[in-house]
Structure formats: C-alpha cells, structure tokens
Amino acid sequence: MKIKVSVPATSANVGSGFDALGLAVTLYNTATFEPADQLEISSADGTRIPRNESNLVYRSAKRLFDQVGKRMPPLRIVQTNPIPMARGLGSSSACIIAGLLGANRLLGDVLDTQELLTLATAIEGHPDNVAPALLGGLTSSVFEAGTVYTVKRDVDQSLCFAAIVPDYKLLTEAARAALPKQVAHKDAVYNLSRAALVPAAFCEGRHDLLGIATEDKLHQPYRMPLMPGSREVFALAKQCGAKAVYVSGAGSTVMAVAERAEAERFYAGLRAGLETLEGLDGCEAFTLLELDADNTGATVE
Image (cartoon, rainbow, N blue to C red; front, side):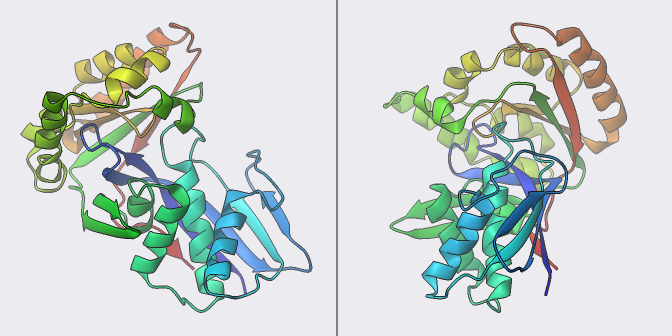
C-alpha cells in the first residue's frame, strides 16, 4: 500500500488578518508513505531534510498514531519540497498536514476533517497556515480552548498571485520576537476593520477593496526591518499593477495580488524590476513564483 499526499503552500495573515487569515496557492509539497522494514526518510528533489525521527512529517504522523492509541509501523517516507523553507509560505504546515493525512489514510481515515484540523493546529500552534493547507481557499480561523473554528471560502479565480522570495530565510521565531507585547487600541481597530473586508475583496469580486483590506499596523511594520529589500519590492509590485501587496506569513516572502487579465504584463514587469533590485541591501537575488489560488487543499491518493 503506497499513499501519496499533496499539500499546497499557504500565505498567512493576508496583511490585516494576523494569526487568523490564510490562503492556499498552487505550489505543492508531496510525501509518499509505504510500509518498510525500518524507518526510511528521503528527499526526491535533493532538499535537505531530517532523515530520522526529528523529521516533521514523521513526527506529525506519529502524533496521530499516538492520539488514537495505535503503534506506528516502520515506514518509507519520500518527500518533495518545492515550497521554500522559512520564507513565509507554510512549509512547516505542509509537512504537518502531509504527515497527518498520510497517517490517517494508513489507519483507515479514523479522524474527520475537523479532528485533523484541530490536531494540526495543536502541533503548529495557530491555524492560519494549516487551515488553508488542509482545506484550500481563503480561511478565517479562531483557536479557542482546544477547538478550531474555521470558515473556508473559494478565492476568486480572476486573481493571480506573485510570491517574491528573497534568498534569505526569516525564521518564525525571529519574526515573532520582533513584535511588541502590546499594541495601541487604534492599531487594533485599524486591522480589525480591514480584515473584515478581506473575504469580499478576495472571494466576492470586490477587487477595489484589495489594497485597503490588506493594510496592516500590527506586524508588518515590525518585521519589514528584518527583510532587506522588502520596501523596494512593495513599491515595485504596486508600480507593476498589484492590487494588494503584503508580507506572506512571517516573511521573508512578499506576496503581490493582481487581476488575471493583467497577468502577463504584471509578471513581466516584476521580472524586469527584480533584476534591478538584486544585490540591494543584503539581498543577492529574488525568485518570482507565478501562482494561482488553490481552492481544493490537500489531497490523498
């Protein structure tokens, strides 16, 4: 029995929705699971990953086996990891969801979607990446007293996305350490009012709201000083026609959103502009990922 799990990359926060909003995009990690004589973990694409029990896919799978009181058998796990690590595109959440779905299928799908989401959130600590990784689309989530409350909406397919990935990592721990312990009441209201517009902007065709809906005062002003070149990337994306630009997750990726009708010109402008920014302020190179929204979420074969 060989099981293959595919999990999309995710972009959390979506500007104003700190630790609550996230959306899935068309870049996928995969993991295959099959019985073996002993634990074997390998990378099919050469990405450096832990090959022992510290591996996050393995640990997540074992967490599910432990939760249902079953002994985890030796497995052969083969991963492909095109989602860049420590760049704010949900690489850890993709590993968690892959491990949980692989284990769940091996056990005969003993947990339902809500139970899987709750367990994934308990492992990750917050639902803003694991929810869209599992469900696809745009998710709005709350984690309260061990329960995850999530609403999923399909993202408008007339939008396209550009993930602008610098050549440096920004670990979530460092990005969170940069945040203040308290925020001003007016800044909280600023974000709450804008986050309320995000579903309409991304899912209901109100593209005129994309810019204001993704503005933020709670995390981006504190994280962008840790992201060399990010201010210039924001300006470039807007110059190229982006309707919204925001820090993806904890960074270091910047996500830009445009209308699909303008995609060719939008991406061409970004490619040309990013070449002029290479070497700027400590960032040697940027990778441009041309993406769409994923409204399906993780799949198991």
